[in-house]
Image (cartoon, rainbow, N blue to C red; front, side):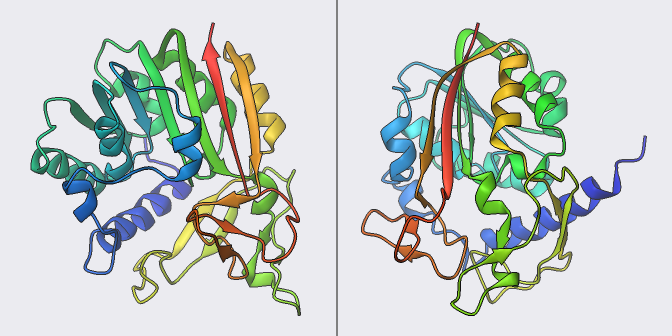
Length: 276
């Protein structure tokens, strides 16, 4: 069956991103190779102990954060991403740093993860962070995938840009430099963006600049998980996030970006939910 046009375009867009992110002005992986890399402060404060746990990382990109979880004590990691070049790079990186026996990477659409990831499932933790769920059109179907991959009592950890922030964009910037209204919170329609430049390497130009994303209201995310048989543990909203989503944001000493004067609206959220 032919893949939907939005998925085809998104896959091409992400293949471009992988090449850029692994390029000379991309992510600095030297600290990861040396075993000295840490997740950002939000995850560091909130993640449960990883020692001895089997972890599934959905939308893992080229595996940098996946391998950080291994360095943080996880016993076994499986990463899933729909980009062939990202998965190939993740496997090479795991081999290079000597953890290929504990890190497995699977090329698959997230909605196909239950079939694509070899049995047994029954993971202790599903890890999903930063710029992941906005690429998925059906958040309730995603919640069912998460629940299906966990053992009873296993947990999801999700950290993401806040959907309220996704309604804004610098393309609609106001006279004072604040981002303006860009996409409606409750629309449900894809947000189609033609984006020429990369957020890691602004000098790089995408060959395939068109992408489709979706805004998922916070209520839909939480309700979808509950409907999938998950029990919400906590939900945190943050006035900071790990990247400069808008030009006006200011980087703090903790490495996070915030509004320059007042915390106008949440920039990120995180939650944990447990499978019953």
